[in-house]
Image 1 (cartoon, rainbow, N blue to C red):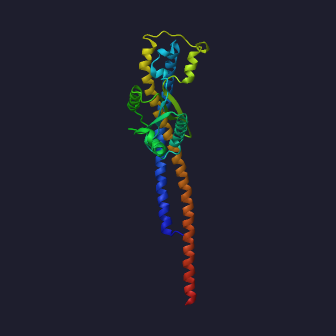
Image 2 (cartoon, helix red, strand yellow):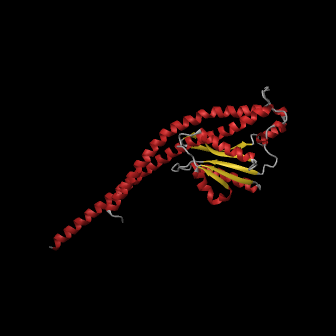
Image 3 (cartoon, one colour):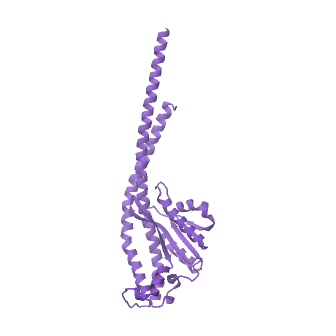
Length: 298
């Protein structure tokens, strides 16, 4: 049985831990508000960009005239997965949920005899994947900012690297994995294809133009030239959106995790204090018995 000194030390240690978790909860709550506003305000812009690209591609009569980055390559053999996670922990299962989705997608591709390459954005994703997929992880990019201050220039750098790899035929298809922020209690891991712009279902739909109720626009310059500039912008925006959604989800998950940790610390302190009082009372009782026994012996 631990001594009174050990119990006192442990109680003081848990109290100190509780102060830390309480402070982290308050900081995460303050950061969450800023990150949530940034994530929600970016969604209409992302939707407009996607809608514009869909309108332009639907107006092209011959899919073969589209740029390779839009229509894709015929082989579709090499797949790049860009896993966006956080650099810091203490946020519950936030990163684990995205890694689980990544593993599922990786195994599906490998079982289909595809070649998979992984680009990790954030250390936590790499730390969980390196044991099983070290050979196919091409690099890990560390986030150069705090979680609530997402940098668009960083998203552009990641996008530029992906585009350079695609131009050098390093892969045929690319997808990003991030966590869509719903609420502090709920974040949904998402898998989104960014290269090529058209997936197989969309290609099939385009080949059956009679089934499409679309508006006809005239573009100047030609659609192909517009897409060459618009698609790289869309890739940067998609990565930026993933970073923003992750930032909000990370702080929300951390706030909930620290709240649970604070509650657990309070319960543990109550249990330890109860054990301390019992041990102290038992010691006092034992000392009284020794004094009484000594006086009777005299």
